[in-house]
Amino acid sequence: MVAAATKDARAAAEQFARDSGVSVEGIKTATQGYFEITARDGDGGGGWGVSDTPYKKVRVVTTIDFYLR
Image 1 (cartoon, rainbow, N blue to C red):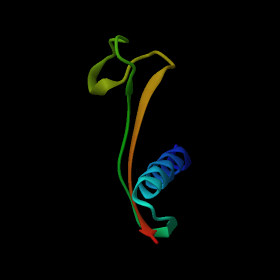
Image 2 (cartoon, one colour; image 1 turned 90 degrees about the vertical axis):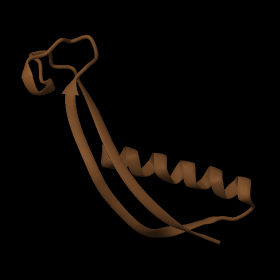
Image 3 (cartoon, rainbow, N blue to C red; image 1 turned 180 degrees about the vertical axis):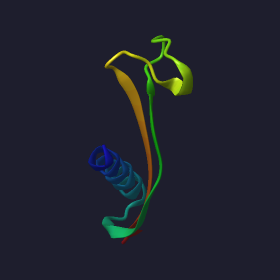
Image 4 (cartoon, rainbow, N blue to C red; image 1 turned 135 degrees about the vertical axis):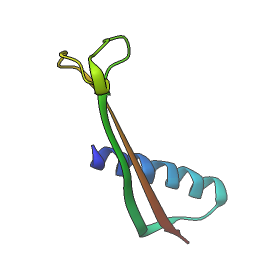
């Protein structure tokens, strides 16, 4: 999940760089500030957002600062 969040962040940075006429270099800083696992929408669930269903919704928030050149 963290790898997917990092890949998405790099893709967004590359699009921003293309639109700005620059290129993306290495990662300057990276933090993982939030990670949450809850029942999917409509699954009901017991307390704390957890249900008996094997299907869960996962949210990962990663902040990555890239060097631009």
